[in-house]
Image 1 (tube, rainbow, N blue to C red):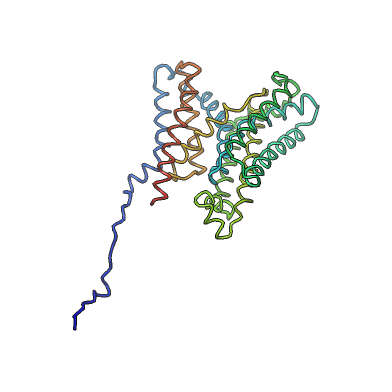
Image 2 (cartoon, rainbow, N blue to C red):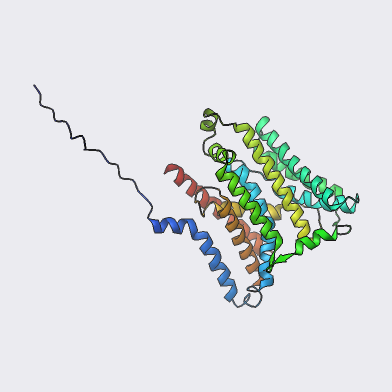
Length: 338
């Protein structure tokens, strides 16, 4: 008879789990805000920019231009959370900017109706993109890039290559130049939209379902989430927010001209991917995106006031986008493995 020994009931097999030290975890989450502060301080004391950069007027310009970029970043966030790109957001914002001006200057419509119709057009772009991607199963990259080219062409036809600057309601321009405590009003509007987006993405079943879809669409389908409907809605919400960004851009600059929207889209994408390295590293999140947008605006403004050539901002945006995509992808994979 073989004598077998049973291990005591209290004996357990423990598998060591590597945990990131608290200090490193905090550094990982807040490195981007810290870097933004350091970059701002650098340009404040850099001899070539120290005279004009640390002024209230320049801060107002930074936050005013940042407001539109940040809004488009928030718009891009909704489909990106589901792992879908929308490259038409910049062109969509330009479309609503041009059409709001065109409805007033060309068709003599009142301000409120011009804004409502433009927002409807921006939302319809999201509806069409979502339909092509979710119902026809077309590539989101090709679909939204094609939509961007289509909108740019239609706007060139509508404007005839001219800038729309007359006939715009002065109330809209006054709104765009209004400041509260020296800070542009449009920046506070962007913060309000960011707060609403944060609430919907983190505190509602719809927002949490978008994260679930982006993490594992097959598992999301198996647990009964309406994957197709929610992805479609993410494009619709993105289209509406991009349309609102276009209206704010018109209020800020007081004129509108046809373009492909690239000058708005690429800094916004850089902000989104930079934001995925902060606050919740490895995940697209609203507050990280806002910080990323501020970082991009501060850096571009500092370069411009330091006497950098016009191409420097494009080079910076390109480098920032590449670095942000690489870092956020790495962090995302690390979090999923963890």
